Amino acid sequence: MKGTPWQRGRLLAGAGGPRLLFGRMYEDWGIELTVLPEPGARVLCIASAGDTAAALHDAGHDVTAVDINPVQLAYARERLACGRTTEGSAEAMMRLGRHIAAAMVPAWRQPALRAFLSLEDPVEQARVWRAELDTPGLRRLMRVALRPSGALAVALRPSFADVVPRRFDNVLRRRIERTVATHPNARNPWLWHLLCGTEPPGTAVPTASGPALVCDDVVHTLEQAPAGSYDAVTLSNILDGPGPDFARRLRTAVRHAVRPGGVVVIRSFREPGPAGAGWASQDRSALWGIVRVIRLGGGRGPREDRRIEP
Image 1 (cartoon, rainbow, N blue to C red):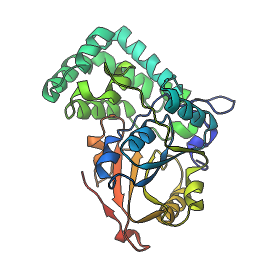
Image 2: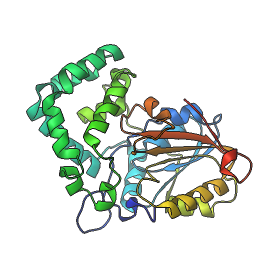
Image 3: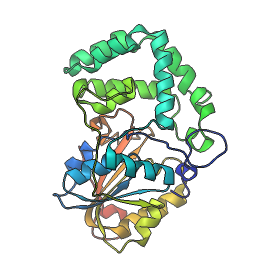
Image 4: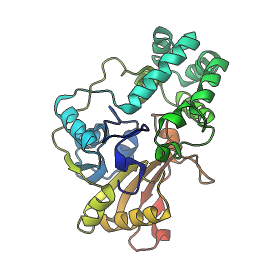
C-alpha cells in the first residue's frame, strides 16, 4: 500500500527488496463471516498469506485479494494452491521470542504450553495464564523485547516501530489474557500459532482456487474499481502508520468502491479510545487493539454510516 509501512515489503531494518512477511494471517476471519451479507457477496481483502481469502471463498463469497508485495502475493497464490505454509519474517521473530521465553519460564516449554492450549474452559485458562504463564520472568523478557527502546524496535523498520503501541509488553499481555478468558484455547488456531508456533491437532491449511489475486496498492484498486463494485472490504493495519492525507484518500476510495449498505472491517494494533475495542474482544487472534465494523450509509457524509456493534 503506497504511503504505508507495507510499501517496501520488509518488516525488518536493512537494505534489500521485498520479503515474505507473513507465513499465515493473524486475523480472525470469523468476524467477517459473522457480519458479511449472505453468500455471494463481492468482497475485497488483503491477500497476505491467504487465510482470510480462503475462508471467505469457502463461505461462498466472490473474493478479490490484493497485496502490494509481489513476494507475499506469490506466496499466497502458491499456498492457496497446494496448502504449504512457509515461515515469514513475522514468524521468525515470534519463534525467537518463544525460544527465549521457554529458556526462562518452564511453563513456556512445549509440553506445558500444549497442555495449556488444549484447555476448553476460559475460567481455567485465565487461572493458568495468571498463575503459570504470566510470570515475573515473562514480564521482564517482554519489557526488554517490546518497549519502544527494546529489541523489537531496533529490529523493525522505523515505519513499523512507530506503529507499535507504547508499553506494548503490557498491552500484549492484556490482550492475550482477554482472549484466554473469553474463548476456548483448544478451538483457537490463532492462539496456538501465536504462542506455540503450530496449529491445533487436525487443523487443515487453507486452500482455495477461487479468489482473484491482484498485485497492487489496495487503495488504487478501490479507486479504479467501478462505483459500488464491492459489498464489503476488510482491511487490517492499513491506517497504522500513514497520516491523515492517506486516511482521507482511503475513506474516499472505500465510499466509491463499496455500495451503500456495504460493510467495512478495519483492524488496528493501536489501543482503543473512548469508543472501546469494538469487535477486538471477539477476534481470537489476541493481537488487535481495535476492530471496527461499519455499514456505509447511502449518502456522502460520514454521519450516515453506522457502526455495527458486537
